[in-house]
Structure formats: C-alpha cells, structure tokens
Length: 210
Image (cartoon, rainbow, N blue to C red):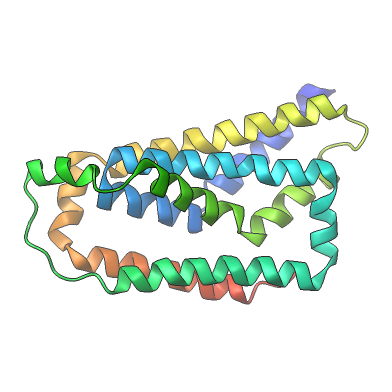
C-alpha cells in the first residue's frame, strides 16, 4: 500500500522538480558565476527548504495559508520581491575581462557557503507555488490515514531527491568547459539570468490561489 503511494509521490515530485523555475535559475546562476562549490551549497539550500514545506504541511499550516488570501499574498509578494531584487542586481552586471582558468578557480572562493545556501533556501522557501504543491501532495495524493512517521519519511525523500537533482544541475553548469563558454558571454549571461529571474518574479506576483 505505502509503496504504491510512495512511487506516486516520487513520480509527481520528479515531474515538478525537473520543470524549470526559480530554483533552477538560481542554481544555474550560482554555478556558472561562482563555481561548483557555490552551486552545490545553493542546491543544498533548496533541498533543505523542502523540510520547511513538509513541516507545515504535516502541521496543517499549509492549509491555513492556502485558505487565507492575506497570508498567501504576503508570501507571494515576499518571494516576488526577493527574485526581483536578485534579478535587478544581476541586470547591473558590468563587462569584465575574460577569465582565465586560474581566475575561475579563485572566483569560487568569492561566494561564501552561507550566502549560497541562503540564496537557495530563501528562493524555494518563499515560493508560494511550492506551498500549494506540497499542500496538494499531503492532502490529495497522500492518504490522511497514512502514519505520520511514513509521511515524514516521504518528506525526507523529497528533500534528499531535490538536493540531489540540483546538485547534478550544479555539477553540469559548473564544469570548466561550460563555465568558460558562459564566461565568454560575460555580463550578458548575468543580465540574461537577471531578466529570467525578474520575469519569474513578475509571474509569481500575479499568481492566484486557484
């Protein structure tokens, strides 16, 4: 019984996490700009934020948020504001001299693990779409009679799977050849990613509860 439920949860989560969104955009930008270490910490931040969604879903707080227009809008605007902030910051990127391989290695240390982790955690944690996703997952897909320990186990899997997925994304986009290719585009890459984040933020701002 629980195996079938778990496989359903895993499949739905796979489809959701593989869809490009703010998490993907932030992990890619951190990986390309600051390297694998920063990208990995960002991915771990995104994965850790899943525990936040799972926690309030198990406590029923997610249901309260979904039924309250005020709370939902507060969360939505906070997330949109954060994405707009980092998006406009990226748009201000200035042209830089072509980076050598040594420069790329030194650049990795410029981004602290705490900063990268926080970037991923906040991006995912404030996403109201994630709130609605986990609410529907824990109220529609998962049987309410499923033992709390089993549901918590699902949550651990969801967090781990999310972290692993985005760590793979970080590994891909932080490869020396990939970074060198993006580096040749210089500030245009930052500006493009900034525009993407702003677009996501604007779209998020107009997200409705239904």
